[in-house]
Length: 256
Image (cartoon, rainbow, N blue to C red; front, side, top):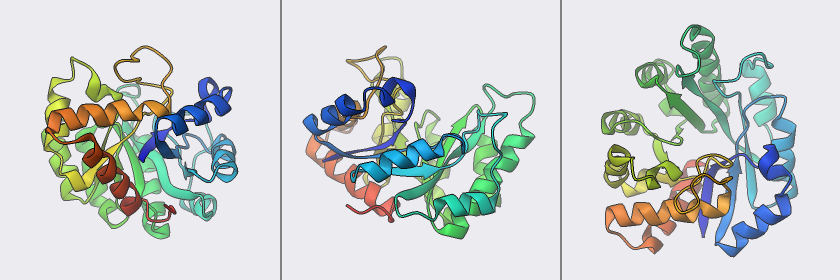
């Protein structure tokens, strides 16, 4: 089976097609998925998906791009994470692409998520864009490696991957790795150790080739695995089994 380690099934483009999207997962051998929270206001919808479907799980967190929403504190995150279907803290991290002028609130929010993850023993789902140096620095300062986690939708350099791996983190690749222009990222996908590799869709965004430009869905995570297998010169079955094993090793509160 394949596992989509990062998707947003509560977003309108997918929520309105829930039956169809879940059926497509089954048809394509995508047996499990982690539904990611981006605000506390929307967390109940994310959790509801996980509660209604045995093969789905949830995370809890506030995306670094989201301003003007409920600001999390450690106690609030811990209370929401105290649920058997919540297996991760995040999506959290830093994004200076959209918020160049006021990053300090992002950094404090990121620290809050790391502290909550360490307190509850659930791994982090980390987003970083145009902020790799600060992301890695805060991870070190807050001892994020104690909780562990994944650098999701990885688009950074081999050096950033090495630094994250050194802190014990996993690296997850999305449909971007299938894009012809993603030359450097393809090299990183070939480099990351097999036992630290995850795959994801980040759906409804970033649909992989041959569906680029369409609304993405978890069923298409298979195309990400196919491209990684090609880049590494390994059988698809090996990428399938390794990424699935890695998912359950990292997200240890999930039941296989």
